[in-house]
Every structure is written in C-alpha cells, then in structure tokens.
Image: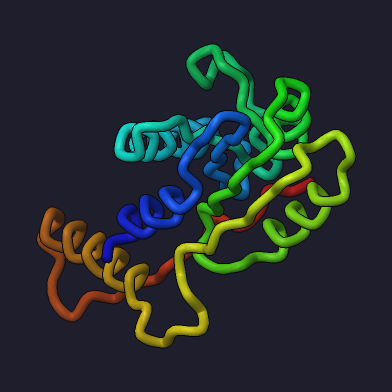
Length: 172
C-alpha cells in the first residue's frame, strides 16, 4: 500500500457526518511550499473521499505571509479547532501527516482535549508508519523509488551513495 493510499484509509475511517470535520495535520513549516503541498494533499483526499479534508499545521505555518500562500493564510490546529467549535462542529477527526507518533502531535492532541473551546469529541488517527509492524516498508519503498528516479534522471553511476536528510525544525 502506498503512503497516499494509507492516508486515504486513515481518513476514510472518519467519514464526515453533520457536525463532524476531518483535519489533515502536519507539523508545519515556515516555508510556503510545505503549506501549499499540504493543501494539495488535503484536496486530493477530499476528492477521493467525497468530503472535505481541511489542511492544518501544528505550528510555524501561520508565520508565512498569506501572499505567499495564494492569498489564504495557513491554519494552525489550536485556532482551527476553536473556530470549528464556534461554528457548531462537535466532532473532529485528526489525520496526522506524520511518519510516526511524534511528540508534537501527541502533545497537541492532549492539549486540544483539555481545551474547553475546542470541539468535545476529538479522535486522533494513526500515523503513516506502524512502528509495531517491522514489515511496514512503505516509507522505505517510497524513498527508494524517489532515489532511483533521481539517479536515472541524472545518469548517476551505481553504487549510489545516498544521504536522507530531514529539514529539522525552524529556529525559535
């Protein structure tokens, strides 16, 4: 199963009903491209599911100028949950766009559960990689496919030497 197929499976378990919202949540970034990519992924999920999936970040993204985001500011989890509750939404499914259960998503979910201004029913979906399953090789296969595409497109010689780098977190 591809990573995107896993997202569809996770999000589809929280099918929208009246009074319910589904959020696709990433860690956030101060780079506009990250927010725009999150929006595209949420839009694709919305199309596949036939119901709206809102793109939301845990943090950072609200520091990106709306002008760099096609005129629409990024949404942050805490303020989005409060706005949904104010609009009468009482149940929210949070679909993490995280490889594994990072402290950020766990902490944000725990905080949201304690927030009296957030919807009363919050559900946190599974992350993309099942850490309990050593056979879950989806991310590794996706990385390998990207490496092979890049190597072939640039006519690199075998053996390939690859360094996988996470962008890290922005400085405070």
